[in-house]
Image (tube, rainbow, N blue to C red; front, side):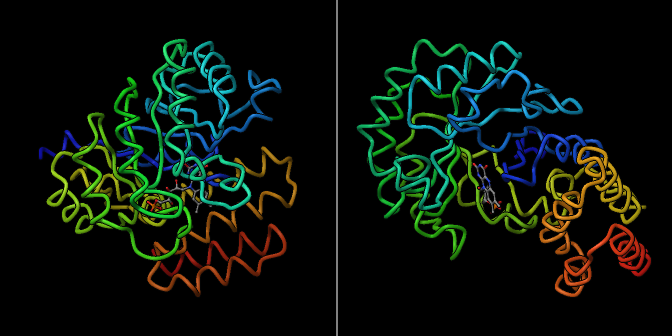
Length: 315
Ligand SMILES: Cc1cc2nc3c(=O)[nH]c(=O)nc-3n(C[C@H](O)[C@H](O)[C@H](O)COP(=O)(O)O)c2cc1C
């Protein structure tokens, strides 16, 4: 495949891939074709979403954003779709992948996957009134990777724009290996475009997946991009700047400054940065050591000192 045809998206991470993060990320790094908001729930939707900062931009640095909803209520999905249409979005994404028991036990997120009948009822009410495109992000199942085999014939009946499959089951949470053979069994059953998500960390990972699944051309990447923000450029053969360590330094510094401004210098900014570093420390040769340095900071000046130390060693 021509690298230019490759579609890459940044997976949503609640609390990490905030609008502010996406803004700073796409300013510094090339190669990502699409962004997703973390999920909105019914509570958010019924309150004034119009002012929600996560719906403030249909594009960030030219990259389109798809807002995501976690719901099992057709009315809520329609309401969200209308709110998003009014703000200029073209697509919303329905989260059927969230694995957490408090979500799944209430039949939301991946808890919907064992119930194709419920999914069908919801989609019948949502289409054709929905004024925007609808894509789905799901897993192979909640209890078993076979669940998707019963779900796909139902999804095929609706004009969904895409099904993004995270190749795990809900019960796995984020643990254990991705199940490529189950993904391979499901893929031919879909008449809709299917995107792949799960454990893409390097060019070798993507190349293997492309060889195994040549019909897939959209690859959603989460941790891989949080660990190595140049990954999308690497995958597309876009040249990496020679001063890449400086770019990383500016990226981290801008993120920190922006969170301090947003939180009006509250210590919450430090907590957010620690969460960010729990992923980003993996871009260093000694991730545990780097993360420990950050984790133990209690003040902004501690943090700033550690950042200088960490980057001085890497320049
Ligand atoms: C802390 C955390 C928050 C997440 N938040 C969301 C979310 O809001 N919506 C969603 O669809 N997936 C969410 N995910 C799942 C990721 O988008 C992605 O599917 C998962 O990390 C697997 O992709 P990866 O192996 O490329 O990281 C979250 C994952 C983690 C670890």
